Image (cartoon, rainbow, N blue to C red; front, side, top):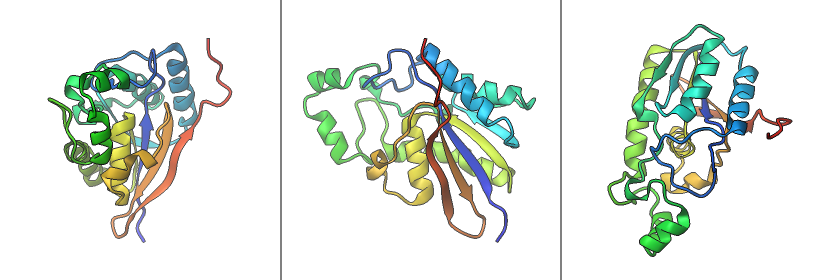
Length: 208
C-alpha cells in the first residue's frame, strides 16, 4: 500500500463571547484564551513536516495558520472555500434569537441537516462541495505529504463526514472543540482513515 496524503485538520481557537451563536462568516476575534490555545497548538505541531498550509480567510483561523507557517517559512494559502457555514439571516444571532424570529426553524433544521437552508444561507451539501475543492487540490498536488487545513467547527464536521462516508445528517456526532486536531489519511488505493478526532493541545493553559 502506498503512503497516504495526510491532512491535519484544525479548528481555530476560542472566540470572544463564545456561546450558542451562529457566527457564520462574521469575522469574530479570538479571545485572549483563544490566542493562547492557538499558539500552544502551533508549538505542539512544530515538528510536523507540512508541505502546505491552507486556511479560511477569517482572522480567527488565520492567527493559527500563520503561527504554524512562521516556523516553516511557508506562506498560508488563504481560501474562502474554507469559511464557516453561511447561515444567512441567522448570522450573528443566538439560538434563542433565531427561535424567536423563526419559530420552529431550529427543530426543522435538526431534522433535515443535510438539505436545510437558512434564509439567504447555504445547506450542508453546498458546504461539502465548496470545501472539497480544496481537498481535491491538495490530494492532486501534495501526494504522500502532510497538509495543514485550518477551518471552522461546522466545516470540519462536514469535511470529516464526507471523507469517512458519514451522512451529513449525522455531523453533530462529531465534536469539534476550539483549537482541536483531526488527522485524516487519504490512501490512493484504499479508504480514508480517520487517525485522530478532536484532540486538544491546550491542557494546562490558564485563562487570564
